[in-house]
Image (cartoon, rainbow, N blue to C red; front, top):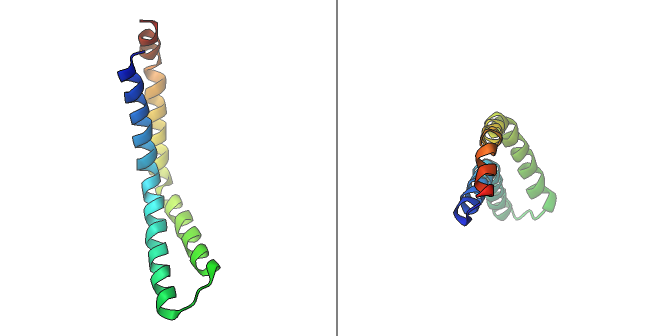
Length: 93
């Protein structure tokens, strides 16, 4: 295997990881920001008030984005298995 191949393979895996985690992290960030603004405006500083809405929002985001996430993961895994003979040939060179 060439160094370029290994770097390309790792880059694809990292890009997929970032693309899959982005919706959940974005929802968590957005809800956290809204809750923080509400806490600052009302001067209520309760830790569970910030934690529970973020968890619920992230679960809902996961529920709605799960089919898309699974499609991306299945496509990536299928491509790896389909190209496995090519990867083995590259390793033997």
